[in-house]
Image 1 (cartoon, helix red, strand yellow):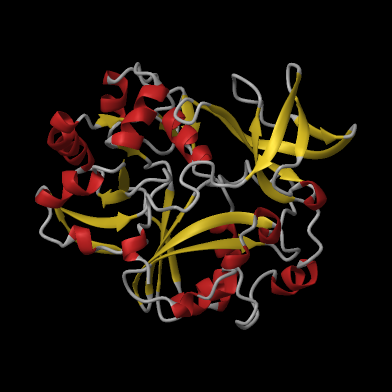
Image 2 (cartoon, rainbow, N blue to C red):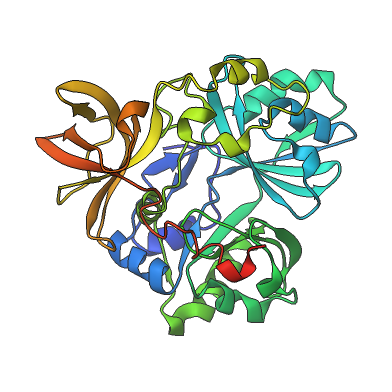
Length: 372
């Protein structure tokens, strides 16, 4: 199969057993290795795992109007950020429906990098940029290596001159790693402390090999996208568009209220979001299911014979020994302890529980000692 984007790490992935038959954002990804994803998950939870997440799209936004341009598109207020911030936001259409979620890396007052997945940020940017003095350019060279787990810091810190331990949660900084120019960001998609390494395609194989060599004695391993899906569901982390079941799902309905700043001047979808606040048709909710397997996404959820929701993302967590579901459920059925029926190959009983399922206080990613 032919794809317009290729990871410089494809040979590494094939050597680890991936057939690269799965693609995302027009790039083949290592959905599975010859190792068991549950063994990889155990490594991430107790040591660390190294992921190739270069399938994300990186877009450089620069110019005198870069900040105003992003504020026109984003639901958050980018003017409140400072250089070195990593800023989570959403993009909605004129009807307030989610069309993408993004992570904005703030490099300066007129220099930004926007990371996004399978949504429509680039289409929205193309439609809007004519009214602004701004340059919007996809960067297909950048590769992203993500080291996630409790040993990530001690694995990387000896090999960079920066104070990696002092890098705050959702902060980033340009530096070198193993002598190569990189940007290091603290974050990830694992519900663990982790770091993302942004590098060139030319340097990616060397850095991949160097990180694994540095962590080998500690039991750090390459980890597949199947592992990534397990740990992100355990951590209650949403994935666009799978956890937004309707084209007009609003940020309110995925409990992303914190990404909406209705106090800032007009932005795309502001009026619709203001009008729909308090009128949510469903909410994302966590459900523990009495099943020894993952429930199929798209499965119906009922209460008293009435459909009240649908399964969005799911996994069977060997770490927690539970079948976990993230679902869109009618608000009146999202109270903790509510019993529901999930319809897959047979009917299963589920109970609404607190999300995230793993580390509900998020102390793994954001220790109490670092909080203001």
